[in-house]
Image 1: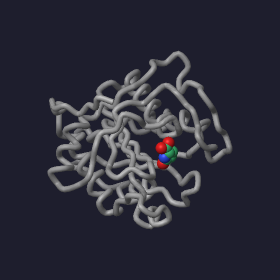
Image 2 (image 1 turned 180 degrees about the vertical axis):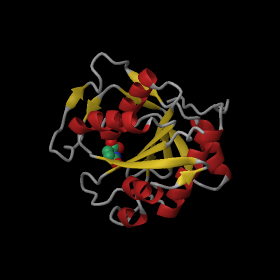
Image 3 (image 1 turned 60 degrees about the vertical axis):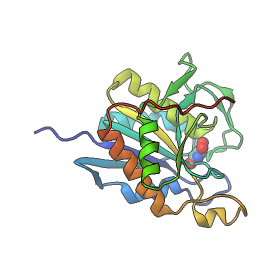
Image 4 (image 1 turned 45 degrees about the horizontal axis):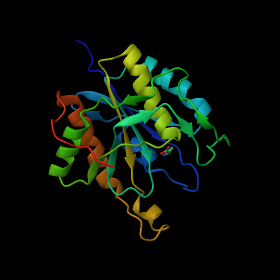
Length: 218
Ligand code: PCA
């Protein structure tokens, strides 16, 4: 009997001024669990531009996942924020964890200008809303390491495993992190965990994207 293809769930180590990263907490909690019959493989990525590509290639080669969901922190966002597009552009506002701050360089030399998420994002967001979990679509993953990682996953999978689905989810601050930024939004870890589990269930079971407008005018 063939084993169900694993789900690859990645998070990041802390970076910048934040000593914690909810993406790391969520991955730690869900690694080695199952969604349906599919095992969840967890991996924590370095916040280091020079090290992500090798790590991503190694993870894809080792696990051949059917679904990839990468998680990162975007302090200041108020909901689970599903990225629609990754740009072939790095422009670091702050240095990464190795002290590198590349400005205006490509993620992949001669790669396409952008890569899209291939998960059914609108259907996922609709399901999360139905369950009372704040979620939405985002048109910019930024130009830092999260965008680089989303681009690398989407670009690589399109080349070597086009049936695999991938996406990137930016998480809000945890409550104790937002407490250091008065007036800023946060989300409890338990809500994030439920939201990620629902998103992964949808990724495995929903074949077609929802045909509903999710765009913006400006
Ligand atoms: N967030 C950063 C990088 C790591 C993370 O969790 C970003 O949004 O690029």
